[in-house]
Length: 123
Image (cartoon, rainbow, N blue to C red; front, top):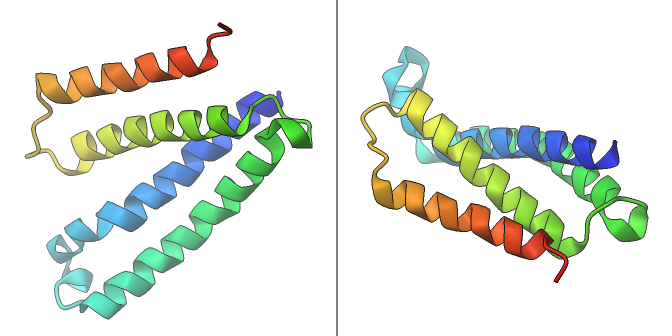
């Protein structure tokens, strides 16, 4: 159960962080965002990052093996990176429809999935 909670919290965390890092690229499409300066954009992104930390810190705290969780530190980081890519690709397909994902993007994603397998495999 801790493993599932960790993955859920990391997914929520990564969703907030993706919006903090890349969501502002769409602000100018809305009337409220047309005249925002870089400082305002940074403050908004920083505010979103706060919510990212509300989920990321408990996910890692509860998921870490030394705290009673099921994952090692390397496994936590690997899970986070894989989730980040899935969230980012979903975000791109939904909000940046003009961006094209090519075979090389899918191949790269496949290699990351392979990395997850290699890291979690008991050798």
